[in-house]
Amino acid sequence: MAGDRATDPRGVSASTPLLTSGCRAVGPVGKTVAMDNVVELEHLDGGIALVTLTNGKVNALSGAVVARIGEIAAELTATPPKVVVVTGGPKIFAAGADISEFGGAEEAVGITERIHVALDALAAIPRFVIAEVSGYALGGGCELALACDYRIASERAVFGQPEVLLGTIPGGGGTQRLARAVGGSRAKEISITGRQVKAEEALRIGLADEVVPAEELRERTMALATEVARGATIAQALAKEAIDRGLSTSLADGLLVERDLFVESFRTEDSQIGVKSFLENGPGKAEFLGR
Ligand code: COA
Image (tube, rainbow, N blue to C red; front, side, top):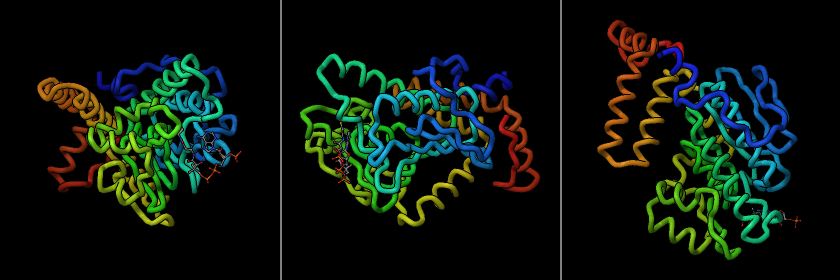
């Protein structure tokens, strides 16, 4: 049982359907594997998977980008690293859906379905997923950041759901995930005005979790990723699962989920290591195995 959990703590099988049959993203440590030049996956030392949007000047979330995000999410679920970082360009994290691909309601069905599938897959990776937001995260870019577990923003970052300015609404999870992050009334105000939310305000309202000077963004992101990667990976995955499942259900049902997963955590070798290390050496000194 513990072994099963070690490879697949959220029960998502390696046969999770890929959104495209394009090239695969997994490569050896330190090697970047080009994803048709729209999204890159790099495996850094220490078990950090770095996902970088590289789709031209504004990182528009075209159909190809969305498909690659889904494909990478499936890969990182089937063969999880220790932690995941999602980032974009220095000025623009992602400018939202590719507006040039918009058509009528028929095209909209495919657009919203595909981005929901891809961002749900990203959110379900059984590891801590950090969004590193350097600049504009608008529309689908904001939704992409919200699908991550945690957002570290540069003080130059700008968030927003400007779809209403095009006469439409967020279709990549924004109405739901933004409301869960900042509350219903603030989510409505942001989505209904389409205004831009600067980093400091994003931090204040819970849309960003940390804001750092632009020149310190990568250092801070990697420091957090490294700290997480050294932790008890399976326990981290179980904590994420308990919180995510609890947020979509009642408190009573969420507490039942917690009870089950708490017990499950004691089936890992890491729990034995962590408890023994605490009793012998005090807190924070355990060297976990990730199983
Ligand atoms: N989809 C398609 N093309 C986009 C785009 C998008 N989401 N966002 C920007 N572009 C294009 C622009 O049309 C422009 O094309 P051009 O060079 O052929 O004229 C190019 O990218 C650069 O955009 P520009 O607005 O000139 O850059 P900027 O640096 O001044 O501003 C943004 C960057 C991100 C603030 C601005 O482009 C913007 O607000 N984009 C739209 C965001 C949006 O509404 N997203 C929700 C989509 S549903």
